[in-house]
Length: 77
Image 1 (cartoon, one colour):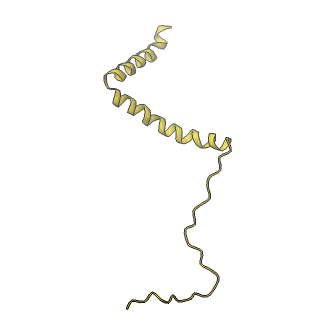
Image 2: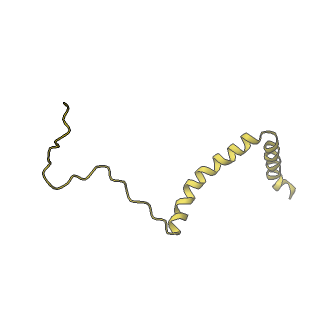
């Protein structure tokens, strides 16, 4: 029975040693692995909690429905 759990136990010991000897690299790998997992799991969770995305920002300025008047009084001397 010990031969079945040996790879997991050895992996745990390896990760524990790396966490003590190279904590920056170890935790960087952990955070880097969490990112793609969150990209897949967070959107469905947000939708189930009632999140609605914001409306799109207008890409153009609406023009008034009237004739354009020329400006006066701002001419250079």
